[in-house]
Amino acid sequence: MVKNKLNCARVFCIGRNYAEHVQELSNTIPEKPVIFIKPATCLVKPGEKIHFPKHGKELHHEVEIIVKIGSEGRVAREEEALSFVSAVTVGLDLTLRDVQADLKKKGLPWEIAKAFDQSAPIGSFVPYNKSIDLNNISFGCKVNGIERQRGNSRDMIFSIPRLLVELSKIWMLRPGDLLFTGTPSGVGPLKVGDSIEIKSNLTGSFSWSIVE
Ligand code: MG
Image 1 (tube, rainbow, N blue to C red):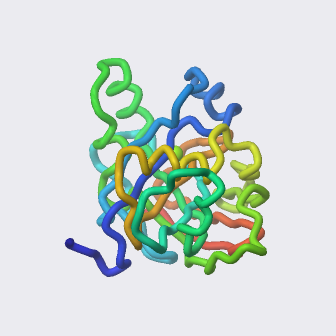
Image 2: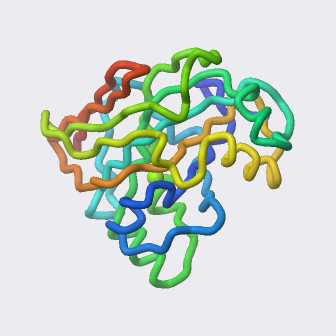
Image 3: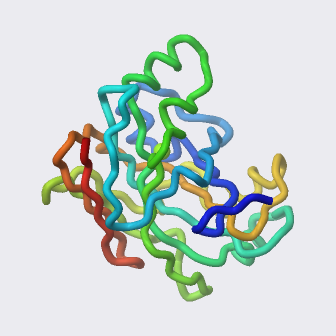
C-alpha cells in the first residue's frame, strides 16, 4: 500500500452530519451517513501555506473533528467502535462551494469540489484514551480573528461509533485511516490573504494562511 509522509492511505469524510449545517445548505437530513473520500495527498500540516485552488471561486471552510484508526478490522457493534480509535484532532474539509453546487445540480461526483490538492488541512493528533469523551468535544474556527463556526460533537446526527460501524459495512478499516466527521453550521468563504485558525478543547489551536 502506498503511504504518504503522514502515514495515512485513506481519508474518509462524512457530509451533512450536523442538522443546522444541513439546513444552511438547504439539504435534507440523511437517513444514512453521506460518505466521500479524499486522497491522503490532500492532507496539509499546520502552518503550511494553502494555495487558493484555481478551478473554482468560492472556497469554504468546514471545521471538523477527525479520528484516526489504530487497528485493522470491521467494527460490528457501536460498543466496540472506540477500541479502533487511536487519536483525535481537528481539521478542515476545504470545499469549492460553487463547483460543488454545480456538480450537485448535475448529479455528478464531488471530487473536484472536495478532493483537490491541499483540501484537507489537519492539526496534530492527540492520542485517544477512554478518559476522552468523543461525544463532548467543543470546536470551532476563526477567520482573521473573527469566529465563524462553533460546534460540539454531541450534535452529530450520526455519532462517531455509528459512523465507524457504517464505514465497516463497506471497507475494512486499516491503521492510519482518517475519518472527518462532518461540520457544524457557519461555513463560509476564504480569500487570498486570509488566515484561518481552528481549535478544540482537546487539541489546542492550529492555523493556516491562504495564498495565491
Ligand atoms: Mg465537510
